[in-house]
Length: 314
Image 1 (cartoon, rainbow, N blue to C red):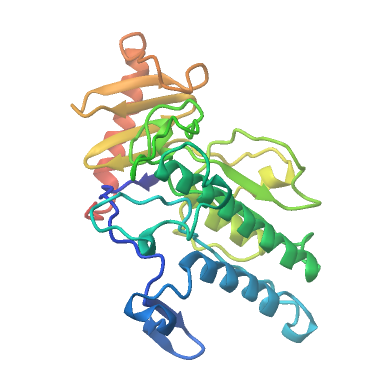
Image 2: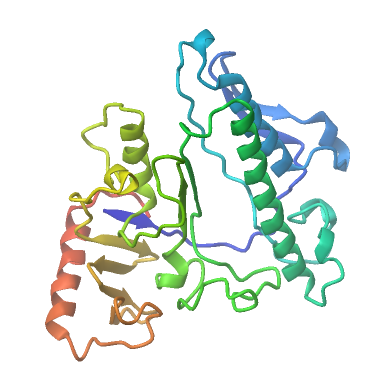
């Protein structure tokens, strides 16, 4: 099993008021660019994340299970571009800012980037709250599973510093790194009546596990070639018998591998480091010299995986 982490290029051109989006609509047999007239000629008519919010809540309103659609369940994936402060560059305008304004954080004596990041997090929280209200209105709270997560760790760009809000919670590294600060992210699940509120679980899992989990929730049939494991037993509060034996990450011909509580990482000189995450979640102590047999066993697994993995070009 593996997650890929590609090279992260400085983000300098993301436009939160785009004049077109790529749209795929199988019902209308449309697959291509769709212009946004209200954002043409540099206008700021529709903020991108507000459009995502409206699309998300409209989908629930139109497709929630009822007798007219034979109680067909709905499924959607929404990827808000928040929080997403951008690199500052000469000529940057509010058109490219992560949020239309920083709201209540305008008077904080923080840098522009940190005020923008705080406002973006607050906006994202508000969007999730609006989703909850729509589910309540159409009485879909009890039978709707909401999964909230991220695709990578905290980033440092646009003037943001990962230590300012303690964004990594004491973990080493940042987004794009193979250390825990780059790849470990929160995974929050809300399923009233099934997932007990305010509980935590330390099961080793990956984003690729969300697909088999979702299929199991919907009582569908999983493809034989599907990677990942279903987390449904854990959500039910049962014993998770099917667990990952190991996880491997790759970035620019460097690798990291997690096997149980042990994690091995190649540094920038391709030298292996070894950490025991049970006692050292912040990866502060390299124990490669103290546990050479463990390191050899783990790194041999990486070599086996490299030899048999398909050529993805990454």
